[in-house]
Length: 467
Ligand code: HEM
Image (cartoon, rainbow, N blue to C red; front, side, top):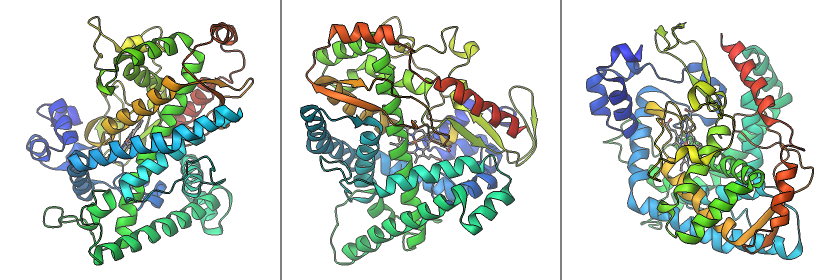
């Protein structure tokens, strides 16, 4: 068990998460002994991701993790993220919302966030802007549709006997049919981008590019021996994982956040007050608290998959065998009363704020939306920054109202999306209409399909399947 093997388990996993593998290894001589891998079954479920960071274990993962850390910490990469967010906001999101407000068009905020995140993630990871969000929105966003359907198919693999989904895949039927076509879409789209970048690099162009694609095509293999910068399939795997990690999670988080705000006018009023008095994103304590609170209740990645490298004992006292499948319900964890208190199911951003008015730090093992330990999310900081920029821009300039009677229901998927999207109408200006607030308070809970109960059923199924 990790607690028994480590001199100091917290130091060990924290060191690994930071990328201090030397420190981590001193405490635990071999990464295999961290007993924290995802296991061979995970790789089978997520075969579409190939050898990308999300799906692999051990030494290859270590090289990918360390090289990604180098990239994510690079000042130019962080600058690229900030400038692409700013320009997408000004040049695409604002004109899109202005147009919707002017023409009184109902829009799907979930679709808007997905496209926004796809465009910005694509600029950051590939240097290419697909322009999927614009006033003349292309009807189908190919990558997004493929990712959504692929993620649903992977979710169902968790329930089916392996032989069944393999046969379905072989014959191209059911959800496996969608997964196969998603695979073709990813290969085609990334194949084109990779070959044109190789050509640009060959011609001496893109010398100063800092996107992930260029970085991995030129990655230092004396430092990262297992990476294969010249292998197109390898590059496709690396970039696909980064794209999926950046796009789907952040758009899911923003969608649930905006829905929760529409249900809690008191929180919205406090956010409006904060953003009218503070102008730097780092100082937006209440916005940060509200985003964390939203992800506690609606974690974009609701499940986490672990597989012990050798027999182990969980902190609960349960014995687990080597290679057994352990699914942790992050969704359930965020709602447990003994962990979060009697008001665990309520949306209360104040729980994240200390008496002195600063942000209250919650350990990652308690707030697991970004995972904990060596495989913790690498993009947490970027994600918070991006979400705050988008939230502030929208809240400062627009009022939005969820369409009367619109059903809020989660899709059974490995990413917590809304089944029917988030349909809203938008108006310009900061004025909070008091009538609308009162009306909202009266309506609270009246037309919401209880998403909690749907997800509780999902969690229960998972628990039953894993034991
Ligand atoms: C609200 C936004 C986000 C949430 C909730 C989130 C959550 C997570 C979670 C739960 C994991 C662990 C997945 C697993 O073990 O299967 C993860 C891993 C990861 N995330 Fe994020 N993520 C977010 C945004 C981002 C962004 C914007 C990026 C990149 C720009 C990113 C990059 C990564 C990477 C590279 C990993 C793999 C880490 C590893 O396996 O070592 N994430 N994220």
